[in-house]
Image (cartoon, rainbow, N blue to C red; front, side):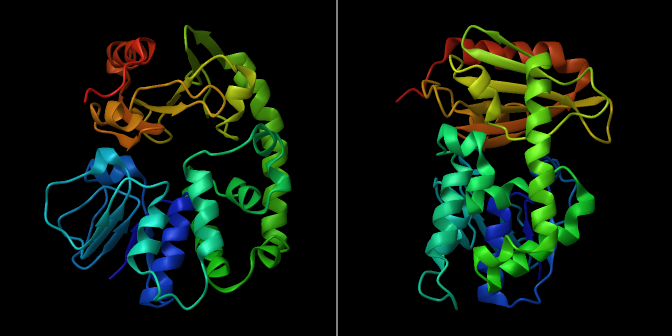
Amino acid sequence: MRIVTRPDFDGIVCAVLLRDILGDKVPIAWAEPNAVQNRQVEIKEGDIIANLAYHENCALWFDHHLSNQTSESFKGDFRVAPSAARVVFDYYKGKFSRNFSELVKETDKIDSARLSLEEVFHPENYDYISLDMTINCQNPADESYWNHIVHLLGNVDISRILEEPEVKRRIKIAVRRNKEYVRYLKDYSVQEKNVVITDFRPLRKAPSGNRFLVFCLFPDANVNVKIRNHDSERERIIVSVGHSIINRSCNVNSGKLCSRFRGGGHKGAGSCSFPAAQAEENLAIILNTFFQNKGERS
């Protein structure tokens, strides 16, 4: 039995909750959504999946992404919610050894992007948001750090976690990186109609930073489409889309749109990956969908 989840804040909190129920010795396997959907990750009999797409081998499955909804019979819970952690928390309500209400509430806020401009510009002033900044899901070398944060969140208060030397170091790096990221966004982003397009393909390695900063620079846009080269497969690109937290007029279900390209997500954010040779055609479909800005038909 393993906990298989995504290395973002929501996935980490899912692991915290599941380990509290199942035992802190249960190993965690970290996986990216595209890898699971494309069957590049082995799911073993008895695995528990959270915050990722369903797999028939799992013993339990918990998720909240509309694009991952399945007609298969399964144990666990699926429903549209602010976070996958909320789905796990409600499923096991009353059975936890600690009060995780605050942690799950903050995870809801972070994963559903219910942030203020002040929280975007100065995340280091907010406990859980600053901790979220230290988690880089694009770097597999950080696996030991993800495991460490799971252990800390499951056992000590946030104030003590923020005093951890490695956490403090990473917060300082994240603050500096965000300042650099603003410069990259200005150089590689352009607004077309209601969409701000960030194209990092000219760069050998795409920069990382607070994904909401782009909307502070382009407040009239209601969605961001970010394009970058795949880290290891240079003939592929990754497209990430996200609704603005300032101009909340985007009607497109991002996760459903990305699922057309074997990706996924939820209404406000999603991602997909496809061969670079298909980029022109696929990006045109994605951008035109956001330009039209039509909601779901009833």
